[in-house]
Image (cartoon, rainbow, N blue to C red; front, side):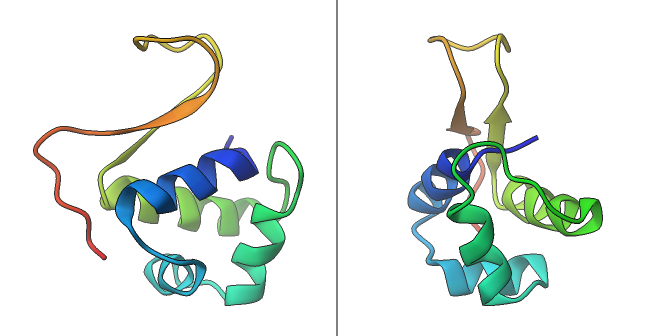
Length: 87
């Protein structure tokens, strides 16, 4: 699961725009735009969601779910140490 806010935060950490994320994930720009404007948990075709999450993780992003161990609470993203972005 990923939220629209997590997607935007992940892109910000990587310093990439929606077009670059679409290219990394192998999906269309309108798909990324739709996901980021979903207003909460992103819903869609599971295969497409997996592609986007995999692209973010390959680029060094760690998605943090509710109640997952982290320094703070809530949802978020974390850039793993010693991992350079693939932007």
